[in-house]
Length: 130
Image (cartoon, rainbow, N blue to C red; front, top):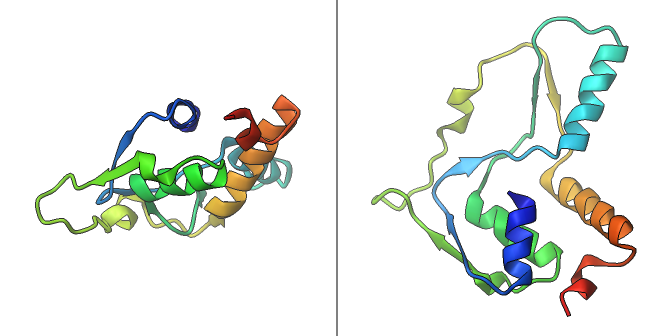
């Protein structure tokens, strides 16, 4: 999802994104680190490994574009439902578990992803756009 969005932004393509549907994004290396920590520590049972906050697709993509130095005006928010209100019912989809481990916040995840891209490419991602 992120790689496709960055490719579209790199090519100055418009992206239409829902503003009224919230979700949480997990940065897989963070998820794996926490899972391995729980395994090494010998933890048992069901764990809720999640982010504390949800975000709309449009807001997420706007933050992504801004972080990587792309034009945020290429993100076009739209509403899926006619009432134009944000769906905040995400928490009802996650069962209540006594054991919860929170992932690092979205800003940290985007920063780590940005650093990985920069390390992989040998420079800052935003300079590749030019």
